[in-house]
Length: 151
Image (tube, rainbow, N blue to C red; front, side, top):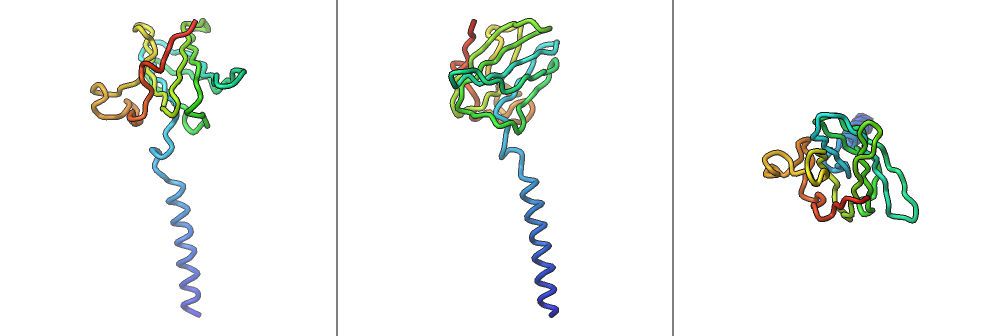
């Protein structure tokens, strides 16, 4: 009887331990597909649109504050689909960019004072740390050639 009770208690403890471990999986396992780093000194509005099908599908609208990052978090975004990024400032369209980078993360810097104003994030120390400023890995990030400005 004692062995049966002890076995039941150990089973329950093992079950809860496994449940806690699964729910606290490292965040690196499910990194966001998109991160926007607004390098400017004003907040922006960024519309993110999936343009893979015959019709456009709005994914989300991001509002990255000045000198800060916004990421897509756990939103389900197909990494293989081309995206349209619309940048607005005070409800006025500034620019549009097409991102065609199948299987790549889209960790982008936005700087309205640079040309081009949208480019891949490199992270601190010109990418030598292998991560964005917010800590996301850049080893699978979009390249400059996969970002084109559209009218």
